[in-house]
Every structure is written in C-alpha cells, then in structure tokens.
Image 1 (spheres, rainbow, N blue to C red):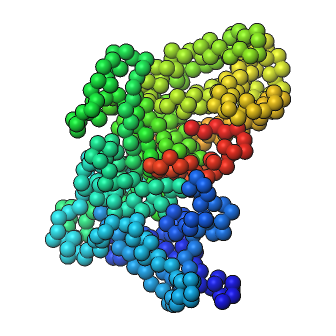
Image 2: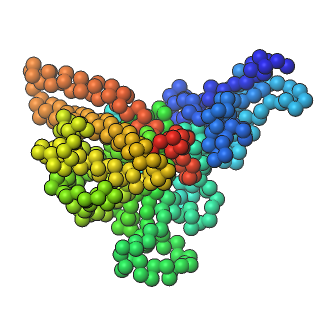
Length: 533
C-alpha cells in the first residue's frame, strides 16, 4: 500500500468531530454545533508527546489524525441543560486489517473519556411530564447580554448533581483547553470537598410549560481550595497544625485558605459576548466575601486568560480601591550608592498601602505587582516614556522623566528576581541587554492592556449615558430620534469592538487541574526572560 493510499484513509479528528448542544424542547434546528479546538489529548499517539507529556510540535498533525476511514463523521451531542452526552460514529468505508495495519477505533477511544451511562436528549412530552431541570448549586449572579438572560451558579463538587453534571461534560476541557486534564471525580471525599464549580446557563422561558424555565449551558470554571498557613499572623497560625488529622467535613470552611482557579471554559457559540468577564468577576466577588480566603491564584494561565484577568482586575481596583488609584512613585527617592544594592521599594512605593490592597483585594503578589506597574505607567505622560529622557536618572528636572526612570528600575528589579537563575548564567553585559529587552516587552504589553481597559470603560460609560438620555426623554422630536440613532450606533460599535478586542477573551483558559504548562509558555521559558506566574 502506497503512502498516497494511507493518506486517503486518514482524517483530521478536528474535522471529523462535531459537537452539538441540543435543546430539551423546541425545534432541533436550534442546536448549536461547533468543532473542537484540540483533539491530541484524546487521539494523540505516544510519539506525539514530548517527555513532559505536552504535544510534540515536531510530530506531524500533533496526533490529531484518525486512521482507517473514509467520510468519517463523529457526532457528540449534549443535552443543553444536563449536558448528558450521546455519541454517534458513522463512516462510508472502513479499512480492513492488513497485517499490523488496522483502523483506529475512535468510538472506543472517546468512550474512555465519557461517563458509562448516556442520557439521550428527551422528547418534548418527556420534558413536559418529567421533573424540570435546574442547575446545581445556588445562583449567585444574573445578567443580560443583548436582551438574553444568563445566570451563574456555584456548587461544591460534593453535591451529587454538580458531580454528575461535571462528569457528563468535562471531556470538553480536552477539546478546548490546551494541556488540560480532567478532574478525578472518584477521589476521596476530603479532596472533592475542596472543589467549587461555577456554571453559566442561559435562562429561557419553556416552550412547553409557561410556568417554568429552560436552561442552556454556556460555560464553567472550577476552583480548588488549598490550606494557607499565615506565618505573619501568629494568632491565626498558633496551634493550627495541632488539629490534624481531623475528619470534620466542615473543617475546610473554617481554616485560612487560598483559592486556585483551575479550569475556565466558555463554549465557542457564546464567546466574544463578555461571558468570560462575567464569570471571572462573579467568582472573585464570591471569594471576596469569604473571610477565610487569603488570596486568589490561577493555575498555569495562558496569555489569553492573563489578558482577561488583567483587564478585569485593573478595572475593579480602579473602581473600588481609592488607595490603589492614588498610588504614585516617590520621585524623591534616594538611590543606593552601590549598584549591587537593591532598590529601596519601601521608599519608592508605600508598601503599607500595597500590602493593605493585597489583603482586601485577595490578588496574588505577582499579579498585584504587575497591576501596580500598569497603573503607575498610566500616570506618566506618553511623551515622557522614552529611555533617552532618563539619562539624568533620579536627577532629572522633569518629575515625569524622573518617575519613568524609577518605574523602569522597579520593573527591572521584579524581572531580575523572577528570572534570577537564568540571568545568573549570563555575562553582565548580556544580562543587562536581556533585562532591557524584557522591560521593553513588558512596557509594550502594559500599554496594550491600558488602552483596552480605557476602551472598555469608555464603552460602558457611553452606553450608560445613551440609555439614560433616552429613558428620560420620551418626546418624539428630532432630538429624541437623533439620540436613538446614536444609541443604535453605540450598540453596533460595541458589538464590533467586542468581536475585535474580546474574541480571545472568553476562549482564554488556564491549563486546568493538571500542573502542565501550555506549550507556548514552555517554549518561552527555554528561550528568553519571561514574565509568567
């Protein structure tokens, strides 16, 4: 058999698989259908992964090929509410085994990642007569997007309904989160109790029961609770370790802890509509009211999720923290006489204030440092952000030039500490060059983020003002008509910018419950100074 023949019997898994959300009631043509983004985690071969278990970029197709079929079609349907899966595999022709060459078995492979029992989408009559579905847990937030209603529910994974829902659909993290792994749902109880799952559903009136709602799954996120020993607080840490071992199921809610956001997924049909920001902000608000939570972290975030977090954290701090908004660099700071001495951060920035912001916002140290650097950069006029204007260093007569000089030192010191092991292997001249390159990259990225944050805030203000004007004036004169036209234009521009500026936001996904780092981050770690968690 020739290579050309073998090629004809191969199909890309991403092309063969179609995922659908089917409504429980109503016409089936309302189903949402979309392809997977990744399939190597399911159909990858051993030689398609590197020694760290990540996809091998040099392997052809990255293991996303299914062999032995012509016109292979794989339909993976989910009930839009319960997310119960139904798998159907068909083909026009299957290759007969020839010696050691045989066709793959994609159905068997997929079922290894699916629950044992399937619940096909029920008929309208069954939906009307059976018990109504309601998302597990407690609704903690509701919002509207373009007139459509959505809700966010929070549930502990020890809840059987939440565990059943997650078991049904967590194969999706392998399709859409690079480097992901599924949560072990049969783990011991004390581990399961540490997981909280946040579900987004669209809420729609039922077409078969006017007194009920129907729900369509939009996305979800998980967070894992870690015990946190606050060494700085003797009153909290004293005797803490004496309570172990302990079988009290409520113990996890009584001890200082850290919440780690793990999986984060918005399904493709719902991306680019702000659901990612709504989910992230709702999770943060949920954590903020828990007095036991000391900090919020994210497990192996990719660049897209970093953007989502940066945009929303910066907006929240500016809106809720006067202390953060008032932060400025002390341009009267005296520099150490020796270059080897560290920069006196406590005199450059009020560390008492930044520590207080960290405690009240629950933002992790490195993330808060980055947000502080972004905010401080925004206080320096753009024309002063030039390296050529820092030649006089801390002696510059223009305070903004002096502030920019100190800002560069502040960021460089953080980058140096973060990349100390790599930099220690370089010659001094190369070390300075690498730090300058890294600083330039960081500054450019901060400018991009700040511009996007300004656009988002401006869009929200413009829409609010436009809506308020129209609500207050009901006269049908020329001026009122003009306002309505402006409102339509604002909405149109908002949708356009959302597609352009936020299309990656809701697809942003940290690498799930595994500790694997996305391969793009791995690649950067090996080649240059990086600014990663």
